[in-house]
Image (cartoon, rainbow, N blue to C red; front, side):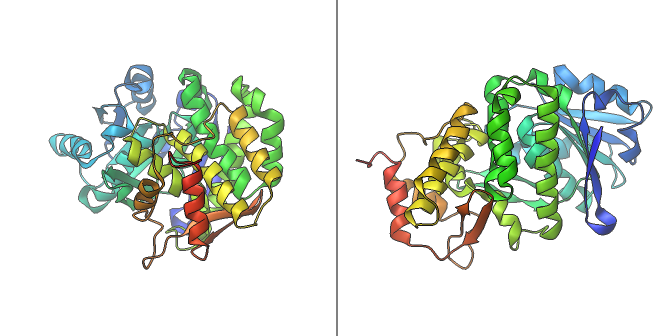
Length: 361
């Protein structure tokens, strides 16, 4: 087991990474207070719910099983968690355990942030994307038809248990979607990690245990450093949204769940690279390098062909990163050096949108 710590002073917590963590006697229970409510979905429950129950031992617990999919990441589904907590008479000394991917983690975390004004929760992410991104940093919430993750709260877990053994049950598509967020860390912070990914992408796709453990650990280290310095995304943390303004637009326009989050972010990163090139920040060789790695990871390098430029723009202007009426984008100066800006040529943004839209020549 390897550990990455997120430094929030008295609210600091560990991210434990390794194989068969759910089988380690006492590991989960050391972070549980009071009764435990396991929140999972109907895909993960048959695979791992009993294992988590066994890990809880004599700790009083209950569970709620949600429908699987991004389409259910909404307030109506969230109410199922609250109803079960109330029916089982859980008090504010309880612990909510998120057992699932990013959707389960976001909803369980938001329930933990809201129930009786805040209770403890633990993340047990079961997808690669959740292990390297959504389970770390305390962002929780649900979608709204007019915007992704528009309703939520910052609420840090007390621990993250990233059991890499559970990744064996992921589909190839879901696994590649997780690689998108891993590649993102190379783009924005660490060129050496990006180069490592270029050299080891085939090992990752082959589910090599050593390669996966290193990729998850390095991704968590990068995110932990960024999040610890900017918990509430007032500045540097926004770098973690590279490709997300474009990608969230794809998800929202297509309907949540049609494209996996990582797939939309992959196409969004290509669009951000294209805009960075149009603004003379990077050259074509950098774009080509990024596109080659994402393609090698079996990820889309083009958005869906049926989105018009104005549709993109309308959705992007409702993004959470809009501040004081100004759209903020994350762009690259080079691989490993990203920055946040609202000072860009709007005509060049529209040119990027038009290039990737149905209006493109």
